[in-house]
Image (cartoon, rainbow, N blue to C red; front, side, top):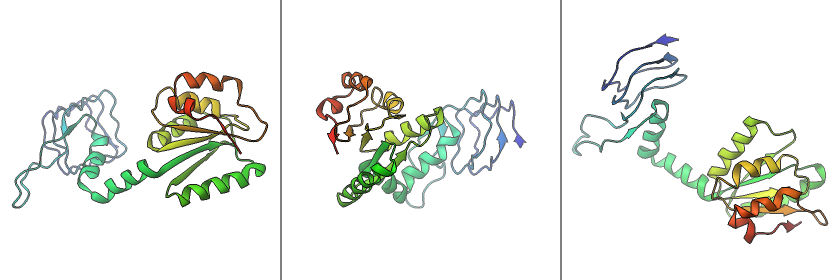
Length: 213
């Protein structure tokens, strides 16, 4: 790993720099220009990285200069610039956030037919179903993944028939995110006891009692 530990790069022009696997511990890059930086696998412990300029300094041919845009994280900088400058990436993000439907549940063999029918109907309605099947107990990593997917989803479908990890995932989603949740339940089954507690958080749950399937 290359090192720039303790370096003072305040207001430096780092445009196009290759910082792959670079140690920036305690380094000050505040106000630096980071257009075109390759920032992968960095070590940024206690690094100062406010007001990083992600746009180019030189003029566009015949079009003047780009508006100056700043961020506070060098690893995020390249993604933000790509998102702003690349129409295809913007289209992908728009497509995900407008069409993605997150499906949470434990889909056993008995529930597989319901899952297949649900996904098929979503596809017919031009949605993008994303399945998260809880075959194992929830861990912190799984919960964080579900929370990230929930932030990108248009809405969420939660199968409460055999909830297992679902209560933990709803706990991470419902109080914090304004994403509609549609509960599902099979036949004579009843929601788990704590389900009613989420109704005080989520207007979408109050409008959507569990569908019986």
